[in-house]
Amino acid sequence: MSQEAISNEDILAAIMKAMEPVAEVQTIMSKSHITTAEAARVYPIGKSTLDQMRLARTGPEFIQLEEKGPVAYTHKALQDWFNRHRQKVLQ
Image (cartoon, rainbow, N blue to C red; front, top):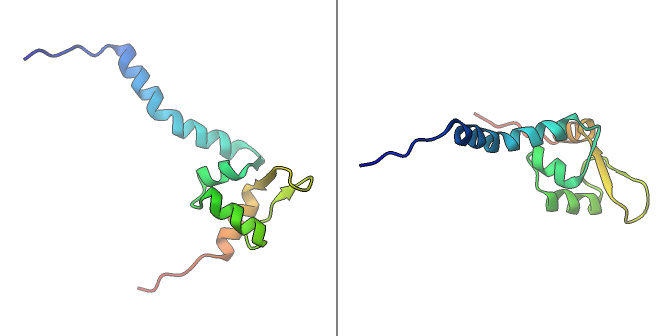
């Protein structure tokens, strides 16, 4: 039975790869305005759900500077919307 030695560089590369999602979330959370895709990445809601709710005007507040232009959400708008739609679980 032979064991291959794992180099420190391999270990560091594996750690860095594992940390990429954390760094992405931190970057998104540091922005004042985020896209629909970014909102779906850090909040428990899918991009298509946000898109559908935006079209139906039932979702979180958003900013859109021109018709059919890109939209942006603030973290506060998303958090406020989630808080208003929180359901209590009966025990």
